[in-house]
Length: 136
Image (cartoon, rainbow, N blue to C red):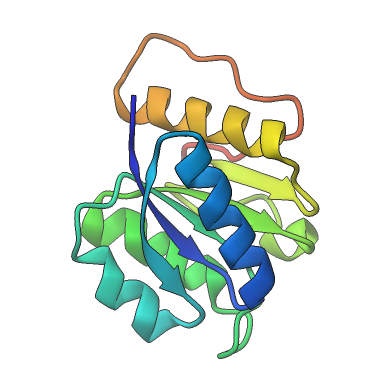
């Protein structure tokens, strides 16, 4: 099922590569944001899933952005980060985290999982590299 994906990533080449993978998988990118303001501006669009890095141009704002995307916009969030330890036991309401680097197949699995969760499609099996967060 195609989905609209928001990429919150400040490393331009990584963001562009992720966007290309999304398109190859049949999804649409609603845009790339490298800070809180840009991410929240794009969240007003029809976003199904956000892929969020922890450290952005405005600091380690990824966890706050993720929580806000969940709470205020109902967007499912998965962190794609080189620093998953910065997330501690997780961010309330977000799905989980995958440690960079993430290859094409891993990103496809993560998106399939997030989309299945969003669609309430039974009990999808999380990808092996996805560190799930407590729902609480």
